[in-house]
Length: 323
Image (cartoon, rainbow, N blue to C red; front, side):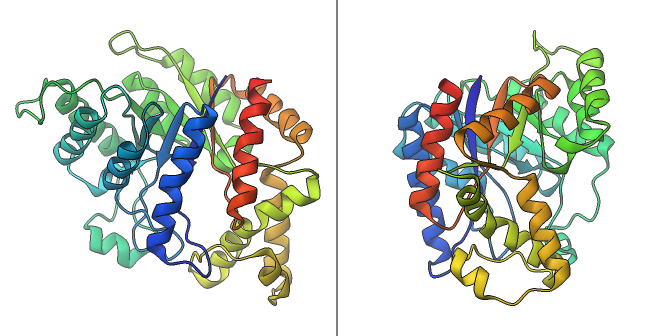
Protein backbone atom coordinates (compact mmCIF):
# COMPACT_ATOMS: atom_id res chain seq x y z
CA UNK A 1 0.00 0.00 0.00
CA UNK A 2 1.45 3.33 -1.07
CA UNK A 3 1.04 6.43 1.07
CA UNK A 4 1.11 9.88 -0.50
CA UNK A 5 0.15 13.37 0.62
CA UNK A 6 -1.81 16.27 -0.83
CA UNK A 7 -0.93 19.65 0.67
CA UNK A 8 -3.12 22.59 -0.32
CA UNK A 9 -0.92 25.33 1.19
CA UNK A 10 -3.53 26.25 3.77
CA UNK A 11 -3.05 29.65 5.31
CA UNK A 12 -2.95 29.99 9.12
CA UNK A 13 -4.16 32.78 11.36
CA UNK A 14 -1.20 34.90 12.44
CA UNK A 15 1.02 33.90 9.49
CA UNK A 16 1.42 35.52 6.08
CA UNK A 17 0.12 33.75 2.99
CA UNK A 18 3.68 33.55 1.66
CA UNK A 19 4.57 31.62 4.81
CA UNK A 20 1.98 29.00 3.85
CA UNK A 21 4.05 28.26 0.75
CA UNK A 22 7.20 27.88 2.84
CA UNK A 23 5.27 25.50 5.11
CA UNK A 24 4.34 23.38 2.07
CA UNK A 25 7.95 23.17 0.93
CA UNK A 26 9.11 22.14 4.40
CA UNK A 27 6.36 19.53 4.71
CA UNK A 28 7.47 17.99 1.41
CA UNK A 29 11.03 17.74 2.71
CA UNK A 30 9.80 16.14 5.92
CA UNK A 31 7.53 13.51 4.35
CA UNK A 32 10.20 12.58 1.80
CA UNK A 33 12.41 11.61 4.75
CA UNK A 34 9.51 9.57 6.14
CA UNK A 35 9.18 7.59 2.90
CA UNK A 36 5.98 9.00 1.40
CA UNK A 37 5.53 8.06 -2.26
CA UNK A 38 4.13 11.33 -3.67
CA UNK A 39 3.68 14.93 -2.59
CA UNK A 40 0.96 16.75 -4.49
CA UNK A 41 -0.12 20.38 -4.42
CA UNK A 42 -3.36 22.05 -5.47
CA UNK A 43 -4.77 24.83 -7.62
CA UNK A 44 -7.21 27.29 -6.08
CA UNK A 45 -7.78 30.84 -7.25
CA UNK A 46 -8.57 33.86 -5.04
CA UNK A 47 -9.40 31.70 -2.02
CA UNK A 48 -8.36 33.45 1.22
CA UNK A 49 -7.53 30.19 2.98
CA UNK A 50 -5.29 28.71 0.28
CA UNK A 51 -2.05 30.24 -0.96
CA UNK A 52 -1.39 27.96 -3.95
CA UNK A 53 -2.85 29.09 -7.25
CA UNK A 54 -0.06 27.80 -9.49
CA UNK A 55 0.90 24.15 -8.94
CA UNK A 56 3.73 24.17 -11.50
CA UNK A 57 5.52 27.07 -9.81
CA UNK A 58 5.22 25.54 -6.34
CA UNK A 59 6.34 22.12 -7.62
CA UNK A 60 9.46 23.66 -9.11
CA UNK A 61 10.35 25.13 -5.71
CA UNK A 62 9.67 21.83 -3.93
CA UNK A 63 11.62 19.86 -6.52
CA UNK A 64 14.67 22.01 -5.86
CA UNK A 65 14.57 21.09 -2.16
CA UNK A 66 13.82 17.36 -2.47
CA UNK A 67 15.54 14.45 -4.20
CA UNK A 68 13.37 11.36 -4.64
CA UNK A 69 9.72 11.84 -3.74
CA UNK A 70 7.33 12.06 -6.68
CA UNK A 71 5.77 15.50 -7.15
CA UNK A 72 2.48 16.36 -8.77
CA UNK A 73 -0.79 18.20 -8.82
CA UNK A 74 -3.98 17.32 -7.06
CA UNK A 75 -4.83 18.83 -9.33
CA UNK A 76 -4.43 21.21 -12.21
CA UNK A 77 -7.95 22.35 -13.09
CA UNK A 78 -7.67 21.77 -16.80
CA UNK A 79 -10.67 23.91 -17.87
CA UNK A 80 -8.75 26.95 -16.59
CA UNK A 81 -5.84 26.40 -19.01
CA UNK A 82 -4.94 25.57 -22.56
CA UNK A 83 -3.63 21.99 -22.81
CA UNK A 84 -0.46 23.09 -24.63
CA UNK A 85 0.51 25.44 -21.79
CA UNK A 86 -0.02 22.72 -19.17
CA UNK A 87 2.03 20.27 -21.26
CA UNK A 88 4.89 22.78 -21.51
CA UNK A 89 4.83 23.46 -17.77
CA UNK A 90 4.94 19.80 -16.81
CA UNK A 91 7.46 18.86 -19.48
CA UNK A 92 9.69 21.55 -17.99
CA UNK A 93 9.18 20.11 -14.52
CA UNK A 94 9.95 16.61 -15.82
CA UNK A 95 13.12 17.94 -17.45
CA UNK A 96 14.22 19.60 -14.22
CA UNK A 97 13.25 16.68 -11.98
CA UNK A 98 13.39 13.56 -14.17
CA UNK A 99 11.19 10.61 -13.29
CA UNK A 100 9.45 12.41 -10.43
CA UNK A 101 6.58 14.39 -11.96
CA UNK A 102 2.86 13.47 -11.97
CA UNK A 103 -0.06 15.44 -13.39
CA UNK A 104 -3.41 15.09 -11.66
CA UNK A 105 -6.26 16.76 -13.53
CA UNK A 106 -9.57 18.11 -12.28
CA UNK A 107 -12.67 19.63 -13.88
CA UNK A 108 -13.64 22.16 -11.20
CA UNK A 109 -13.89 25.82 -12.09
CA UNK A 110 -13.38 28.79 -9.79
CA UNK A 111 -14.62 28.85 -6.19
CA UNK A 112 -17.00 31.76 -6.87
CA UNK A 113 -18.71 33.22 -9.91
CA UNK A 114 -16.41 36.32 -9.99
CA UNK A 115 -13.40 33.98 -10.06
CA UNK A 116 -14.95 31.93 -12.88
CA UNK A 117 -15.49 35.13 -14.86
CA UNK A 118 -11.89 36.20 -14.21
CA UNK A 119 -10.65 32.82 -15.44
CA UNK A 120 -12.82 33.10 -18.54
CA UNK A 121 -14.60 29.78 -18.16
CA UNK A 122 -18.15 29.39 -16.87
CA UNK A 123 -18.76 25.73 -17.66
CA UNK A 124 -16.84 22.56 -18.41
CA UNK A 125 -18.84 19.55 -19.50
CA UNK A 126 -17.53 16.01 -18.98
CA UNK A 127 -17.16 15.62 -22.75
CA UNK A 128 -15.16 18.86 -23.06
CA UNK A 129 -12.97 17.81 -20.14
CA UNK A 130 -12.26 14.43 -21.75
CA UNK A 131 -11.37 16.09 -25.04
CA UNK A 132 -8.98 18.49 -23.32
CA UNK A 133 -7.28 15.59 -21.53
CA UNK A 134 -6.78 13.87 -24.89
CA UNK A 135 -5.29 17.05 -26.34
CA UNK A 136 -2.98 17.41 -23.35
CA UNK A 137 -1.90 13.77 -23.58
CA UNK A 138 -1.08 14.17 -27.26
CA UNK A 139 1.18 17.10 -26.40
CA UNK A 140 2.89 15.18 -23.60
CA UNK A 141 3.39 12.10 -25.77
CA UNK A 142 4.63 14.05 -28.78
CA UNK A 143 1.80 13.03 -31.10
CA UNK A 144 0.18 16.48 -31.46
CA UNK A 145 0.64 18.73 -34.49
CA UNK A 146 2.66 21.12 -32.32
CA UNK A 147 5.68 20.05 -30.26
CA UNK A 148 5.53 20.93 -26.58
CA UNK A 149 8.98 21.64 -25.25
CA UNK A 150 11.37 20.76 -23.83
CA UNK A 151 11.55 17.59 -25.89
CA UNK A 152 13.15 14.51 -24.41
CA UNK A 153 11.54 14.98 -21.00
CA UNK A 154 10.60 11.79 -19.14
CA UNK A 155 7.02 10.58 -19.22
CA UNK A 156 4.50 12.50 -17.08
CA UNK A 157 1.75 10.13 -15.81
CA UNK A 158 -1.78 11.52 -15.85
CA UNK A 159 -4.42 11.02 -13.15
CA UNK A 160 -8.09 12.06 -13.09
CA UNK A 161 -9.55 13.59 -9.93
CA UNK A 162 -13.10 12.39 -10.13
CA UNK A 163 -16.58 12.03 -8.79
CA UNK A 164 -19.44 10.68 -10.83
CA UNK A 165 -18.82 11.30 -14.51
CA UNK A 166 -15.09 11.77 -13.97
CA UNK A 167 -14.76 8.09 -13.09
CA UNK A 168 -16.23 7.21 -16.49
CA UNK A 169 -13.82 9.63 -18.17
CA UNK A 170 -10.85 7.96 -16.49
CA UNK A 171 -12.06 4.53 -17.60
CA UNK A 172 -12.58 5.63 -21.21
CA UNK A 173 -9.10 7.17 -21.38
CA UNK A 174 -7.30 4.37 -19.55
CA UNK A 175 -6.15 6.58 -16.66
CA UNK A 176 -5.84 6.17 -12.89
CA UNK A 177 -8.63 7.74 -10.86
CA UNK A 178 -8.42 9.67 -7.57
CA UNK A 179 -11.60 9.73 -5.49
CA UNK A 180 -12.34 11.50 -2.23
CA UNK A 181 -14.71 13.70 -0.26
CA UNK A 182 -18.40 12.82 0.10
CA UNK A 183 -18.14 10.52 -2.93
CA UNK A 184 -16.31 7.99 -0.72
CA UNK A 185 -19.48 7.57 1.33
CA UNK A 186 -21.81 7.54 -1.66
CA UNK A 187 -24.05 4.51 -2.11
CA UNK A 188 -23.17 4.52 -5.82
CA UNK A 189 -19.42 4.26 -5.21
CA UNK A 190 -19.11 0.44 -5.44
CA UNK A 191 -21.03 0.35 -8.72
CA UNK A 192 -19.03 3.27 -10.10
CA UNK A 193 -15.72 1.60 -9.32
CA UNK A 194 -16.91 -1.75 -10.67
CA UNK A 195 -17.91 0.04 -13.87
CA UNK A 196 -14.52 1.81 -13.96
CA UNK A 197 -12.65 -1.48 -13.84
CA UNK A 198 -15.01 -3.20 -16.27
CA UNK A 199 -15.02 -0.42 -18.87
CA UNK A 200 -11.34 0.51 -18.53
CA UNK A 201 -9.71 0.93 -21.95
CA UNK A 202 -5.94 0.48 -21.57
CA UNK A 203 -3.65 3.11 -23.02
CA UNK A 204 -0.08 2.00 -23.65
CA UNK A 205 -0.52 -0.96 -21.34
CA UNK A 206 -2.17 0.93 -18.48
CA UNK A 207 -4.25 -0.90 -15.90
CA UNK A 208 -7.04 0.35 -13.58
CA UNK A 209 -5.70 2.16 -10.54
CA UNK A 210 -7.70 3.72 -7.72
CA UNK A 211 -6.30 6.25 -5.25
CA UNK A 212 -8.41 7.35 -2.28
CA UNK A 213 -8.04 10.84 -0.86
CA UNK A 214 -8.84 11.04 2.87
CA UNK A 215 -8.56 13.61 5.66
CA UNK A 216 -6.47 11.38 7.92
CA UNK A 217 -5.06 12.64 11.22
CA UNK A 218 -3.58 10.62 14.11
CA UNK A 219 -3.19 11.60 17.76
CA UNK A 220 -2.86 9.84 21.12
CA UNK A 221 -6.62 9.78 21.65
CA UNK A 222 -9.66 9.97 19.39
CA UNK A 223 -10.70 13.22 21.04
CA UNK A 224 -7.29 14.82 20.46
CA UNK A 225 -7.42 13.78 16.81
CA UNK A 226 -10.87 15.37 16.43
CA UNK A 227 -9.37 18.56 17.86
CA UNK A 228 -6.69 18.39 15.15
CA UNK A 229 -9.38 18.04 12.49
CA UNK A 230 -11.45 20.90 13.92
CA UNK A 231 -9.71 23.91 12.26
CA UNK A 232 -10.26 22.59 8.73
CA UNK A 233 -13.78 21.37 9.47
CA UNK A 234 -14.62 24.69 11.11
CA UNK A 235 -13.38 26.65 8.10
CA UNK A 236 -15.51 24.52 5.78
CA UNK A 237 -18.61 24.87 7.97
CA UNK A 238 -18.14 28.63 8.23
CA UNK A 239 -17.74 28.94 4.48
CA UNK A 240 -21.23 27.52 4.01
CA UNK A 241 -22.57 30.52 5.97
CA UNK A 242 -20.17 33.30 4.99
CA UNK A 243 -19.17 32.29 1.47
CA UNK A 244 -15.50 32.70 2.46
CA UNK A 245 -13.09 29.82 3.05
CA UNK A 246 -10.94 31.24 5.83
CA UNK A 247 -7.46 30.60 7.21
CA UNK A 248 -6.98 27.83 9.75
CA UNK A 249 -7.63 29.02 13.30
CA UNK A 250 -6.18 27.74 16.60
CA UNK A 251 -8.57 25.39 18.39
CA UNK A 252 -8.88 27.69 21.42
CA UNK A 253 -9.91 30.59 19.19
CA UNK A 254 -12.53 28.41 17.49
CA UNK A 255 -13.95 27.24 20.81
CA UNK A 256 -14.28 30.86 21.95
CA UNK A 257 -16.04 32.01 18.80
CA UNK A 258 -19.86 32.16 18.64
CA UNK A 259 -21.55 29.73 16.26
CA UNK A 260 -25.09 28.93 15.23
CA UNK A 261 -26.77 25.59 15.85
CA UNK A 262 -26.59 24.92 12.12
CA UNK A 263 -22.82 25.53 12.04
CA UNK A 264 -22.35 23.33 15.10
CA UNK A 265 -24.19 20.48 13.39
CA UNK A 266 -22.08 20.93 10.26
CA UNK A 267 -18.92 20.81 12.35
CA UNK A 268 -19.99 17.57 14.04
CA UNK A 269 -20.80 15.97 10.69
CA UNK A 270 -17.44 17.09 9.31
CA UNK A 271 -15.56 15.69 12.29
CA UNK A 272 -17.40 12.39 11.96
CA UNK A 273 -16.41 12.20 8.28
CA UNK A 274 -12.72 12.86 8.94
CA UNK A 275 -10.51 9.79 9.39
CA UNK A 276 -9.20 11.15 12.68
CA UNK A 277 -8.33 9.16 15.78
CA UNK A 278 -5.74 6.97 17.42
CA UNK A 279 -3.55 4.79 15.22
CA UNK A 280 -5.96 1.91 15.86
CA UNK A 281 -9.03 3.95 14.93
CA UNK A 282 -7.46 5.26 11.74
CA UNK A 283 -6.17 1.80 10.78
CA UNK A 284 -9.64 0.33 11.17
CA UNK A 285 -11.32 3.04 9.10
CA UNK A 286 -8.67 2.89 6.38
CA UNK A 287 -8.94 -0.90 6.19
CA UNK A 288 -12.69 -0.58 5.70
CA UNK A 289 -12.22 2.03 3.01
CA UNK A 290 -9.55 0.08 1.17
CA UNK A 291 -11.65 -3.09 1.27
CA UNK A 292 -14.66 -1.21 -0.13
CA UNK A 293 -12.72 0.52 -2.92
CA UNK A 294 -9.88 -1.86 -3.73
CA UNK A 295 -7.58 1.18 -3.81
CA UNK A 296 -3.85 0.77 -4.30
CA UNK A 297 -2.84 4.07 -2.72
CA UNK A 298 -3.90 6.46 0.03
CA UNK A 299 -3.55 10.19 -0.65
CA UNK A 300 -3.66 11.79 2.79
CA UNK A 301 -5.09 15.32 2.96
CA UNK A 302 -5.26 15.92 6.71
CA UNK A 303 -4.22 19.38 7.86
CA UNK A 304 -4.43 21.28 11.12
CA UNK A 305 -3.37 24.60 12.59
CA UNK A 306 -0.70 23.10 14.86
CA UNK A 307 2.19 22.26 12.52
CA UNK A 308 4.07 20.22 15.13
CA UNK A 309 1.00 18.04 15.73
CA UNK A 310 0.58 17.76 11.97
CA UNK A 311 4.16 16.54 11.59
CA UNK A 312 3.60 13.92 14.29
CA UNK A 313 0.43 12.79 12.52
CA UNK A 314 2.26 12.52 9.18
CA UNK A 315 4.92 10.36 10.82
CA UNK A 316 2.42 8.14 12.63
CA UNK A 317 0.39 7.62 9.47
CA UNK A 318 3.46 6.32 7.66
CA UNK A 319 4.30 4.02 10.57
CA UNK A 320 0.71 2.81 10.58
CA UNK A 321 0.65 1.78 6.93
CA UNK A 322 4.15 0.32 7.04
CA UNK A 323 3.15 -1.76 10.05
